[in-house]
Amino acid sequence: MLNYRLAPQATMAGIVRDNRSAVVWLHRNARVLGFDANRIFVSGHSAGGQLVGMLAGTQWEDLGLPADVLKGGCSISGLYDLEPIRLCYLNRVIGLTETDVAAYSPMRHPPTATLPMILTVGGDESAEYHRQQDEYAALLRQRGVPVRIVVQTGGHHFDALDRLGDAQSELAAAVLAMIEATA
Image (cartoon, rainbow, N blue to C red; front, side):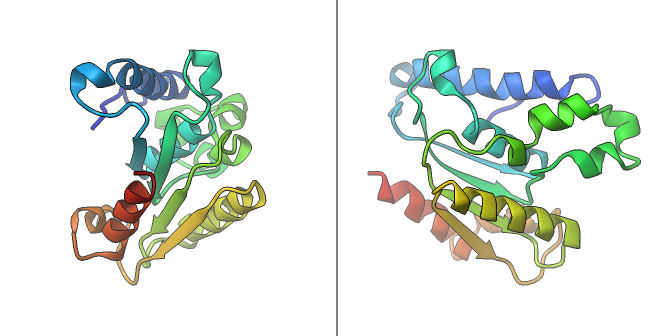
């Protein structure tokens, strides 16, 4: 479980950099930490879902890692286009610029390697979350990225994540299947 600095104390550039640095550190310290550096998966909710997209779209070779360092991702209620955030009241606190939107929207930085991606959103979430997921899934498929959409019936933005921790849920089963498929 990663932690990173949050807006507004940190910029979007800093937040993305924190997460990329964490993946680099984990990969380089895997042996000491007791896990396989060739089996790194990422998952995130909401802003964390946006970070999953940004990590998938990272040129890892530029950071000294293999291009396929990530073996899969799961984005729950992700934000793939930051422009609606820039245009709404939330931006008074976050402070996104047009440059930030271009640099840190996963829609503009599709995955650089073909890693499986799981996308899901709470069934009762706003149409905007569903629209963004649909558009991101279409982009991923266009790029040859295997995408699995886990449909959630009901559920709002804050409990969409709960299904990941429920061993009986379709989301937990999808994530486990993705991980097991790389064994």
